[in-house]
Image (tube, rainbow, N blue to C red; front, side, top):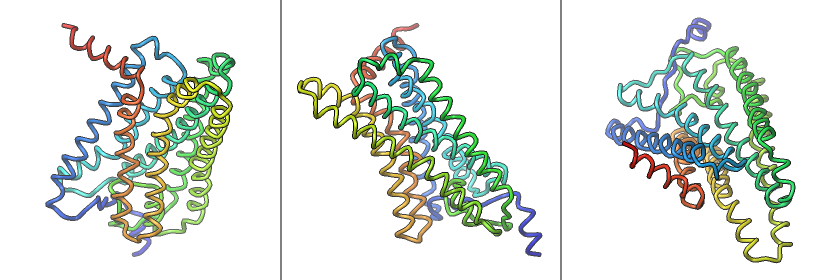
Length: 312
């Protein structure tokens, strides 16, 4: 009977953020608003960068890629949550769950890689300004983004292939609002040793190494700023890094908060609420951080809105 329960799984139950039915309309309105703000905000960034020739530089090329990834990132998790709230259902199919895990890993990993690439871009621009246009040429920038996609594609595919060998019991409950890899491994009814080993290795590759790369880039930038004699030059150089530093702090800070909350508390519900910060709130705030702190982006957005209003 146990074998039968483990082999005929066609659906999982997503427990969501709360079992309280009175909170469901509030969650629906809140997450629908955040989803729309995220998609529209990041879409405006992409349109502003593509429509303004002054923004056709490596920094804004990476920013538009980050905005595209953020749109996909939130679209991977929130729409299914909204559908479940609206239909008063907690179910997600086995294939749907695997698909959600696959794309979540891809876009979470791409966020890490792109933030690292953007830090490297700032490092070259500030520490080696005379070589910047030679090093960060369009072909090299495109190659960096392509490498990020290829690496994360294979890492995510490996996780999915390993997950397919796991067995799950009928009626398995996932204490989250989406299918998250670590939670899926926890609720599996079969041996998960290999999955856990690969998870830890992948976390090192996708989180720790990119973070080390970002810290190294900024350590070199700070060293270069210290040797600058011009106060105006220091301000201009650091102002180009301000938005990126804010996004990095927000992304890694919230991700660290989720990790610490999961180790300190054994409440899966609290951990899933904390994970909203980096899965939903961070992609939503990124366009505001870059548009409010960056004169070029604000100018491009202004021109874009003016053209949209004036066009018949």
